[in-house]
Image (cartoon, rainbow over all chains, first blue to last red; front, side, top):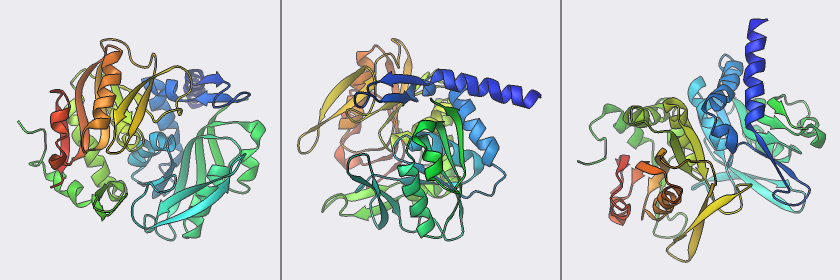
Length: 182
Length: 182
């Protein structure tokens, strides 16, 4: 079908534009680097278009992006679908009143913050990040939003690392990704 | 000529969406918070449109955004004018080969990194951040780009704090801002 071919071609170009860097940030990790995607103007535009096509008729009023690479993909999607953009940040970056959610890392913990009042109860939200690995960060984002009675419609990432089973960790929360990186 | 658009009717709407948070991150500082702007889809779009209108016919092939709030404004501009987006990051975030530029803070110093090969010699570049204060970060960004032979056409920020005289620190490079905070 023509539209599927078009989609496959865009996905192929996006996948080809992502580069894998071995042993970063530490030995044994194959890091999926999206900066090369941002240098390919057509592939970057296609990435945003694919998200926008999926979400523009879903009455989404909030796009929440996870610091920092979620700040690159979230705002263009938000602007295109007419939604608010809400940055979810590392601790002590957002001024004023925040709510925070602690989450586990491989070693130790981290914390994610959102402004109080950025979102209203009942709003429909999309959570965006460049990549889902174990799903810990996305889970923290979902928690923050659900604690203020926002409905998280879906999580959207450019890349999934399926072996790390992040999708399972999201439970019943849908996940949409463009590229699997094995 | 002042690089400030205070005659455009969209500017007023943008100005009202910038929050001022006293004593953040430390006592005596009036923090300019752009997050309310991001919650207003029309005002956010107007801000991007104002930048795009200024730069779209300027043969700019690279938009460089400074981590992290430059990641929110840079990519929508890059996408609209058909330019690459290049993130300028805090140390050790970018994988692979980088060049770095150290710069002085009020107390101590910090460092900005860029990927080698992201920008070619002779490319025309726009540097984007949410705000210019002393100009130290923007200077470091310009240095990084000029060291690889790129031409920095202009720096673009939503907000300028004129009392901190950052404009004069840019080695004669033009600066375009939407709003001044006195």
